[in-house]
Length: 213
Image (cartoon, rainbow, N blue to C red; front, side, top):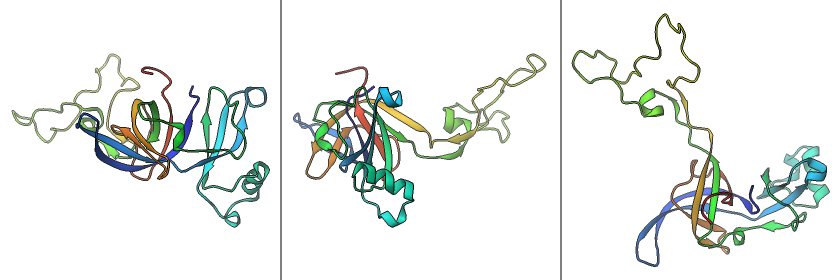
């Protein structure tokens, strides 16, 4: 479990140069200040977590329970509520703002997001199958998956057999990404490499929970 976490938005990808004049591909994340709306503790809730919000939302467009939830915490209503599971919530308080200053260059983070949806995809695209021969008698089955099981025994197709189906639009976590830079003024964090999801997608950033320091 993490002890630092933040919600952001994927802006896109670009390139920067490091101190050795090498080109480094980076993903730009917009991390607007997140306001703590609720603090969950093991004694009362069974686990530790922070419920945060970001952005602004008009009260008249909210339901009364939603508006009351923000009023109880004396926090300005935000676009949505996101729960961040934490190791320990001690040191946090209601209304506290969490921003890009949580992270520093060189830190390792885990990024969770919903991957791009690809719709229905075949076996070659979805599972990297080789496909069937392009010639030598193969007739209109070039991208087919091939055999999916035996005949009389076991007389069924095993569960989990890789086939065509819906691809993407799934929760994905990329581990141990390195922070290249953090711009507190512009609320931007540059992460080395790629991050799941489309431009404008919601991302959850937390410090790496395993692997490299």
